[in-house]
Image (cartoon, rainbow, N blue to C red):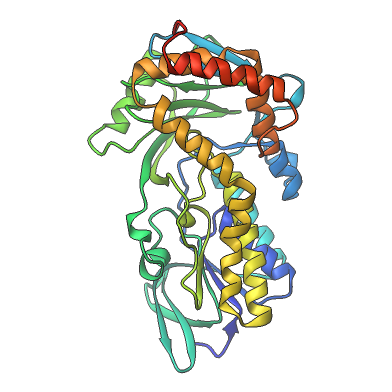
Length: 396
């Protein structure tokens, strides 16, 4: 163990961890970013324009710009939702995107090491992070004032230090990155995200085909442990005539369904990103929320480091939920109801054909907040939702 005492050790170098490391390094803090080598999270890779603006992300990292989304119902009915003049949905490759974020954190002054978190030890000298070095396999130790766990939905940092974290409910996601077909067709369009709300592909979530320029992500999510995710993806590829496209890699991981009730242990640990459960219900969108949640954690960590008051760490969750809690609650209710049967999924896709629904959906996605300026449109949607919920409106 070296004599260096870090202000913070950030465990996990995904969008959340890399954002935290950069923000704290920008503040002049001594930061160690610890990340495992070679891990790429299964992810559709969608990012809203607001993310590029809020976090100063260059357009060059976008591998595609989706101009519409297509919702596919159990009956195979297809509803197109064009983005229109609002903008586009940016698409990134996580291997390139995440590495760029890590390198930016290092450029800001963070120190980067490769290894796997083992445990935290505490004694009269303070807090020590133990990790297994990537190359030699030795267990090394570093001193720190604060440990920040950004190590995913099955976070070892959270499980060891945050009460109830080990019971986090998750959807299990699996996708295959393939080479995109050379020509667009009804089955695949390089400017369109396809979302399948079909029980045979996912009994409780959805499946997707997202364009990534020269490649594409074909994936599915489900909390049903007995459901074959690989089988669903194979079925999709066959149905869409994509089985002959070259498979570049396969990835799987749990995706959290709900933010943890507490993100810190009250002394020297706080969690962020998937480890804190900040993935949007219903949509599964995580990149923007991971980075925004990471910024909230970095701000709380800075207050903790400046004052020495552990109570400052609680401000991270409060700040995030104040901004996004209502959206998460609405999306959670939507997932619970609309994803529960093919009959309801059919009605949900029918609702997506409504222009009011499309406009408010895209505006909320682009701006990452509920749209309050159009009460008449909200009222129309409310009346239509009630008709669908009560079965007063035809599903197709």
